[in-house]
Length: 442
Image 1: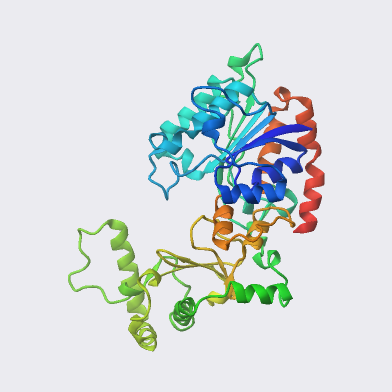
Image 2: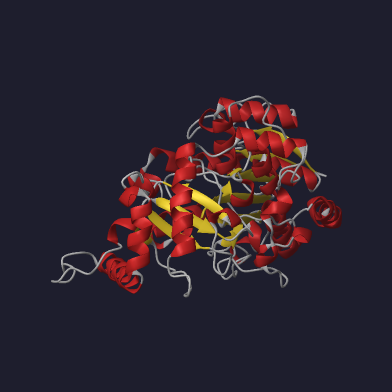
């Protein structure tokens, strides 16, 4: 057995993973009251606290001793959807509160999680600061990020049907070792790489297998509760008509279709002052129109020349490959930038904003409980009676349980020489039991 500290705990993705591997929670920290309430209701641990008070930059650290420290520390300073100011933004400095915990308690293993962009070139300085800080504290850590997504793992390895590529920073405390300076990991290769594991083919996922049973009472309830609005149905009808009537003899284009730019090329050509990417898309849309002018003109006429199509729904992206040309055979996202359609295998990443995936064959959005299952949370996990908007946000901010387990197993297996035996035995000894349960559930 081992103990763990769960920082930036959310609703408990790390808790689910580490408790399944034999861990007991010694401390949890989540400053969002709605997420902390869900955490308490599912795990029986009061997590409502602020890490800046529990581990201040100066002063007493009150986090109790523990063996494994985990934390999906706030990603806004590093996310492509944020301002990308890294450590210069106030929330970026929360890493230093993590460092204070590590400095005081010296847990044997550290597992940190963040968005893919934290290890991108724009944040090279911030990445170097994180890695060097860990080494200064006596931790063995690779210069290279471990990157994994649940769709790259088979059900037997705890995977799930969602593209959720995340960076993991895993570290082992070696500061007490007489040769610590030679063990800090400067030459370590990445623990994991973002590619299918053990021959798994991600195309084998079927999102339908993770939803309420078709025709069940639950499904009928979900169809009513998460049904599409009339306006959304109208948008999908417009683009479904496009799929079924335009260019049927050729493969659907891989580039975005811009409704307003499906027209002939200007006689003078496109302005050289436009960005190259914009001219490229305009050229492709104009060429597509010229090949299918009659069908596109008739399509527009059937829909009032698209006057009723909102500006945020006038771009269409087909990313479903050879899937049948029917939006309702696919997974759909109504994004701020337009409509995106993907194959019904695995979902796009859940995000903490309003673009929840629509399951085409069900003609509804995925429910929070179904999304929790896709995130690897237990079957009996519950959001209680809170509004759905909070549940979707919490799922979007969470970690995938199976990925965390896979990452921790891989780290413990690699560094077991320097990790206490009881942690090694618990984590590696729990593997088969976890795999069997997940395989049965999936």
